[in-house]
Length: 342
Image 1: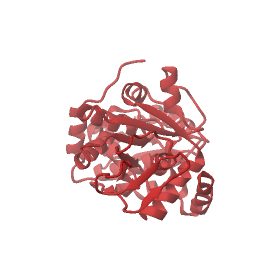
Image 2 (image 1 turned 90 degrees about the vertical axis):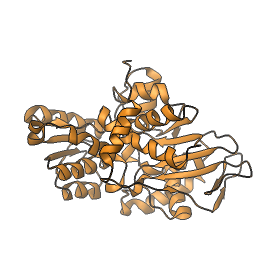
Image 3 (image 1 turned 135 degrees about the horizontal axis):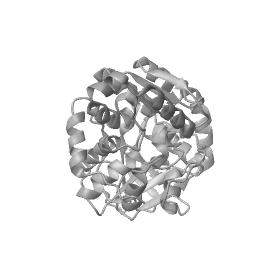
C-alpha cells in the first residue's frame, strides 16, 4: 500500500480558498433526550456538558451547505488549480449525485465547462440540480464504478480533466476543512463519526483532526452492502464491489489510492450498519431535530443512536451530517424502513 498523506497546511490553504465561497455550517443539538434502552447506548442531545455520565452528542450540519452537501468544499478547492488550457477543455466527473452538483456549481463559479456522468438510477433532483448549474449530465451505468469508467473514457477522448469524487488530494484537502470547523466549535471532541463511501470526507477530516487532536477517535460508518473502504483497508488494497444501498452518497465501488492508506492509518474503527439503521438516522433527525437528511447524511447519526458505535460515558461525540439532498418521494419508504431498527 503506497503511503499517502494530506498535510494540515494543505487543509488550511483549502480553508483560505473556500473562505466566502461556502457556508460556515452550524453545530446542531437538541434539548430533547433520546434514551435507548435494552443494553443499547443512551444518548442525550444537548449543548452543555454532560453531567450524568451520558455522552454529549452534536451534529455537524453539512446538509445545510451550498449544494446540499460537503462535496462543494472539495470541488471549489480543486477547480481553481486548473491551468488556462485545462479550463478551456473543461472537466469531467463521475458521481451518484452530490459531487456532480458540487463540481457543476464550482465550474459555473469559475467559468469551466463541466460534464457529469451519473448512473442511470441517479436521483432526478440531483440530475436537475447539476444541469441547473450549467453542467452537461450523461447517464451511464448501473453504479458509480461504471459511471467512473465512462468518465475516464470521455476524459481520454476529449482531453478533459477528471475531477475524482474522492481520490484526489485537492478534493480531500477541501473536505478536511470540515474537521477544522468541528475543532473550532468543539475543541474537546472525543469521538468523531463519519459515514463513508470512497473515503474522501473521512480522509480529509481525519487528517485535520488527528493532526490537532490526536486522541480523538475516528469512526467510519458504512452500509452493510457498500463497505468498499473497510474492505479495502482489511485487504490492504482496493476491493471492487457492486454497491447496493439506500444511501446513494455512500455507494462507492472501491476505495481510492489516496483514501485507502489515509483511512488505514487514521481511522480507529469501521462499523457496518443495516439499511434500517441508516433510515432510523433520517427519521430521528426529522422527528427530534427538525432536520431533513438524506440517507448518506444520516448514516453516522443512525449508527450512534442504534448503539453500533462504542462510546465511553461522558464522551463528547460529533456526527457529520454530510448531506440533505433526499428524494422527497422516497421519504415515506425510508421512514417505514426506519421502524425496523426500533
